[in-house]
Image (cartoon, rainbow, N blue to C red; front, top):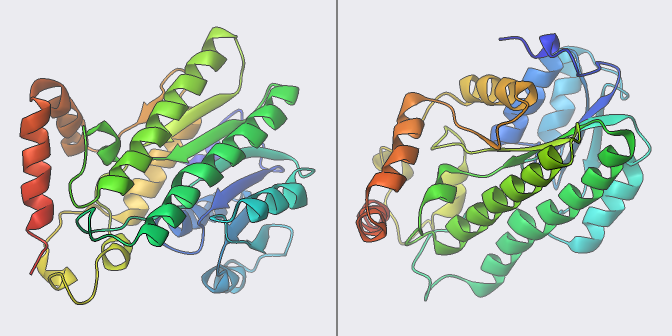
Length: 276
């Protein structure tokens, strides 16, 4: 499973990764560098990415770093203006985060900021890059959603679940339009389950919830998921979304078998178990 064996992808062009400084975005950057691709990274803090230049002995042209806060609409447009003239063939819309807690208690400003990052920035970049790729009838937009996208809701993660449902629905709709119009451009949505990242640490409050190590959330290897999901997303021609792992495929099937109330009640019990 080698990323540099993707026939349609030109190693001389660029791949854009948002939210590239940590977690899944950082894992994608490492895999792409191993495969010798040129990458444009954007994040609010690029310190981690600077270390990769020394590790891989890279030139600035091979790994370009941009500091922008994509939860701010103006900065999304500024970022696009900076990079639009490069030969870009893929964008991975990975930037996003979650917020844990009962809806009545959740900080509204943080919720709105999450919506701005998880939805607004992705919407803008998807639109801008789709029009860019359509002009040359070439390119791929990879949006990162979640297994949460398939759930009818997510008590204690209500806004996060809603944003990821939006990402999946948007991607499937656009990709269907592209296939029907015989376009060679594709929008593919990756739906990860729990991963070994700082997502849990960042989304849980320090005071109100259990120690993160005690949660015992089952996760899979970050790099293993990164290589598998990215290879599939770059390789497929007709699929709208990508699942990795038997458990996630079974979980997706369960959303069709069980009633909405059963699913919501189970999500509620699992998420509530994180409370002290």
